[in-house]
Image (cartoon, rainbow, N blue to C red):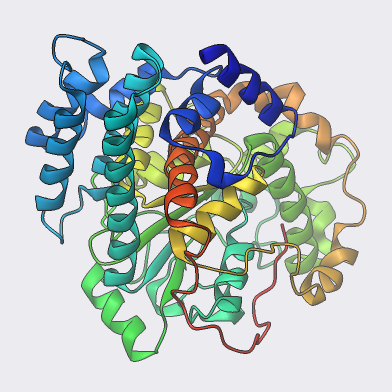
Length: 451
């Protein structure tokens, strides 16, 4: 009876825990989507999957049309067989996985709990989808973290090292020659304030100096015996058809609520101007302007104006002026996230984040609190003097100007929530023994977590 599952969902929202082993597919789907229904997003994943034969089988399942799904176990079995035949080296896997999960969840929401044979078929399909994800991550052998500033990318890099992933720690998984360093600051405005002025900031707007292709990047990582790296800039080749090297590498996207991300980023701007400009920070943030959100936006326009969408789309979209990101950009970013990234990791949803890392990546150590505090303590003096008005910027202006980024974040959490259904079933069917894909070495502590 669905009332029971609604009550279960309320308990989960209030913080109660349910043993993962107890969640069959029907329970998992209703516990995650029974109240917070996302039917339109679920259906969109099905209708936009770039695999015509798979879409043709999924659409009747998602529609809830009883005539089309009279033999539901057979339909699900047909989907499972077709899923096995998709090419191993295809880039359609993230979209295919999400479309399958979405269609099954829609069937559950619209037609009620699955019966015994349909439930068994659904769980077999979900396990197949999961095993493909893990196998695909292992086969590509290299992880690429799309590190959008202040989303926990440094934490993810350090945690990767603790779990045996080989990274270049001193740069938070960045590789110098790839030139994927972040671009935060508007040098033109910077120079208007003080010309010639101090030689700061360190990470200004500028194009890439390097032209490494995805295949060349993977080869270079192999030469250096590395199995993960981070990109803190934009996709390769620029524009909305740029590449995140998803064919060559497993792609990971950490996300964080825009309000928290922005406050952390504002603090970082203040700190960086203190480190790089030293006693000249007051030139850029004097007593009259340091409490003016407009001054901060002029100095760092991109990071304070829908930075998720800018970073994912890249190209000219990254450099659009304040207010230049529109609904069409959000739509493109949502589609890209759904069809490109193997895993989406919401930083604030700790249990969801930990399970995705453990079950999706095979990492046994998921403790994000055990970070090396050395760098954080060394940087703390540069945080002093942060204007007390800065935390108020979100309500004053940034919430409105970042409304599209907030919608993107909500969609990203939805994608992670959908994978959560898969993890619920996998934990129940396969048991909690799905980590240890990566050999675990001694911890070198070369990466710092400074959220």
